[in-house]
Image (cartoon, rainbow, N blue to C red):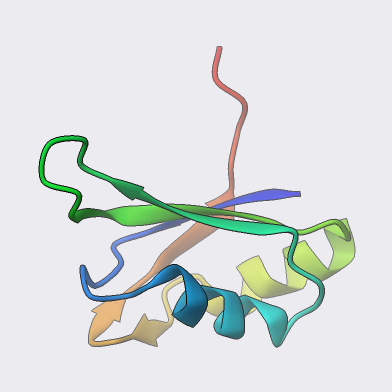
Length: 81
């Protein structure tokens, strides 16, 4: 399951996000999207979890939860059209 996580604090690192998501199950990958020119975080990320049930539980519990001072937006990432 591919999960979108938005409204992240710009200081959050991929390792930090992986630890949060691993509380819900196995994590295949974590990718914080960065600005090409500056290398700074754009404030959102994608997390791949192999088990859809674990991914759904993470979405349910983390959506609108506060992390590093910001309210996260967590939902299933939809494929690009």
